[in-house]
Amino acid sequence: MSDSAVDLSAVPAHVACVMDGNGRWAARRGLPRTAGHEAGLDALFDTVDGALEIGVQWLTVYAFSTENWTRPRDEVRFLLDFNRSILAARRDEMHERGVRLRFIGGRDRRLARSLLAEMDAAAELTAANERLTLTVAFNYGGRAELTEAVRRIVASGMRPEEVTEQTIRANLATADMPDPDVVIRTSGEHRLSNFLLWQVAYSEMVFLDVLWPDFGRAHLFEAVAEYQRRERRFGGLDR
Ligand code: FPP
Image 1 (cartoon, rainbow, N blue to C red):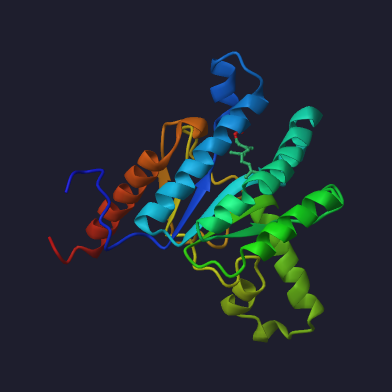
Image 2 (tube, helix red, strand yellow):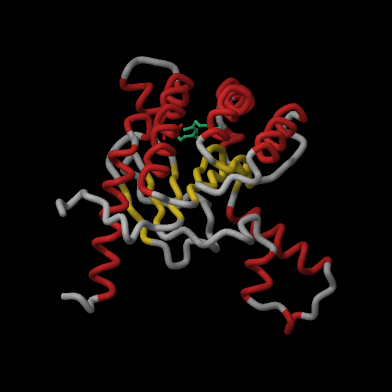
């Protein structure tokens, strides 16, 4: 087995990606940042195909953070409209591939009703698919998610001593999902940026020096192979 070959008997169940570097990719080509997001979308779909190919069951991607609202208005508008048009254009294709689409993040007033309706329609259409769950974190922040969980627990009237880690987990947007086995961040940055804070407690982190629009299935396989090498070292029994 070469160093970047994936061991198909030990594929991580859940891979999470911080899709970083779209802006820099565009700037290097003298293009507007939005062109980087468009190229980033192709990278995302190639990654989905790669995940299907090796049998990853859960893929979670950070598409828009609670902090992204501070970006220039035009870019924010583009990302919101973009999400809506992608969903309309690509959800049937995802459905045919057996992908279940999900969205996590705040459903606040800044998101147009038509966008929320598009997200709901895509989630509903694909709800029974079982090959791969693609969760798009949109208007998502880990701290906001935890804050929301605490609010719900308090509102339920639970006594403090009744609250367990299980209670918190059950009140997160990811309640029925396994924790990520591996988190990939592209573009050479080494931060979590408020992504899945609770869920990544034991995840392997793989940082790749490639800008997201240049990412694709080959990089996914490389990251999975890296994860598998670390798992084997950690287990230590077969050495
Ligand atoms: C980070 O790069 C990327 C984003 C904030 C957007 C990610 C969106 C996509 C890949 C398109 C897919 C969209 C949906 C809705 C599924 P950056 O802009 O921070 O890049 P920079 O760090 O180089 O400026």
